[in-house]
Length: 182
Image 1: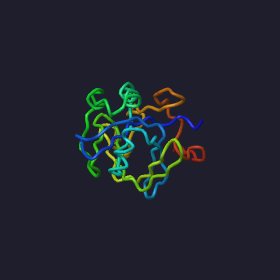
Image 2: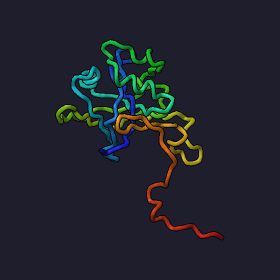
Image 3: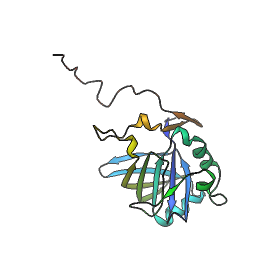
Image 4: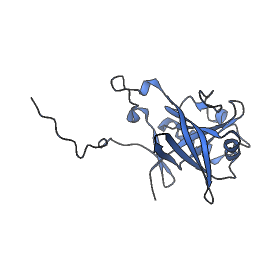
């Protein structure tokens, strides 16, 4: 019941030509220094063996405009489908990893697997972030920060995909002192 979660496309494989793409909602940050995250994957998934073989993957944030592709990549198998072509998604050669990233994604996170933790139905891939690729149109020119609201990223909750709503505050806003007016 820990929802919502990001709905991401994970790309994996040893090259653009030998890659796959699949949907993951069980993902998140687990450490900030070094930057690390995880994905949990069922061993019977086609992509599981690709990740185990190459020990790397890329997390690609998804947007409202990618909702249909995100869903389809989670319900059809890469064993029988070319998910890139069928969903009009563009695989771009990785920068720090061999697997591609999704050009249409506003933010892609290249990762190297540090360990695999068998948990039962899923195995958790614990990975170090080795590179972050952000679409420049979502970078605030003043702060250099990635503008999540402008990117239109989506979330997953109880079997549904949702766009993110209005920003309610930022970290620490509840204790921030009001600025004096001059």
